[in-house]
Image (cartoon, rainbow, N blue to C red; front, side, top):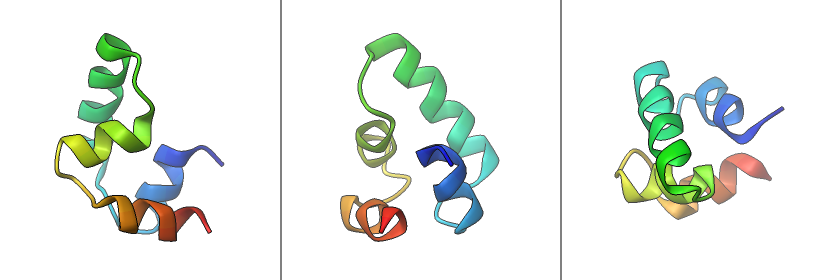
Length: 52
């Protein structure tokens, strides 16, 4: 499962936030987890916990 779908399925972000993060990722080339954190949708700790 990809990180975006993982965060979505665990309720950390919603579909709109995922779409915005993916759009920003395409522009910047940054990792999706970093983009989600930069946009303030989740903390790095939340992202790391979801991926474990």
